[in-house]
Amino acid sequence: MRRHLLSLLLLLSFCLPGSALLVMAESSPAAYAAASVTITDLTDEPTDYDNKEVVFSGEAIGDILRAHDGYVWVTLTDHENAGIVTDTGDPSDIARTSFDINASISVLMTNEQAALITNLGRYRVEGTTLEITGSFYLACEEHQGQSDVHATSVKVVTPGGKLSQSPRISLLIVGIVLICVGVALTFLFRVLRNRQR
Image (cartoon, rainbow, N blue to C red; front, top):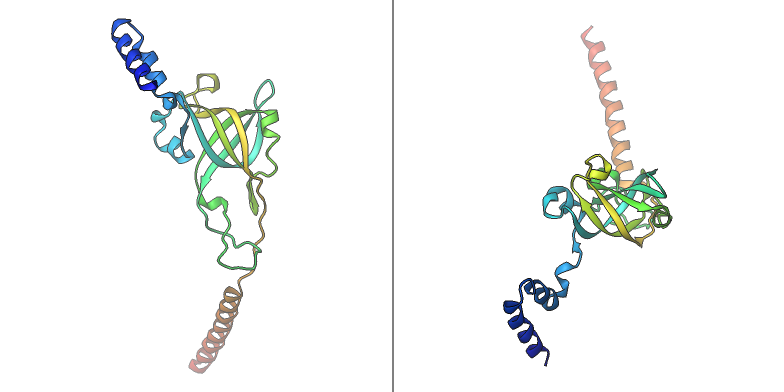
């Protein structure tokens, strides 16, 4: 039945001008869905997403800055997992650091949306990871031509929290050995220099 209805709509699209777009929209409702991207996508290929609705996730870092009329700016980043060892007791557990940031973007959101952020990423703190749905602008006319996203929906993916750096025993042992070698070489140097006199 649905197949016949689509065929009838297609036939009508050739008879009625402008109705071809209606048939295309009816047959593919996902055509207008927001594009799922990464922040790196937005910074590496911004023209592909300019003036389009996008969905992406990122960690909130830095500070929340006031904008205008109940809005704020939040910086979100993409990053890789590498860096500080957490206090889970397993040295293979790695947490993220600011040195691993690949890309960032400014997001304009309401005060209510920003209230969902419980942690901002900085040294030894993992920021709240948010999923943002909003419009991406390569050169936003409203905000002096900067690249930004105007959020329509903000969801918390992970709340973030404090990171702790557990000492690595192997690095401590290597450090002690190197200090001992340095002291021994200094002593040897002084002995050899005194013999030459």
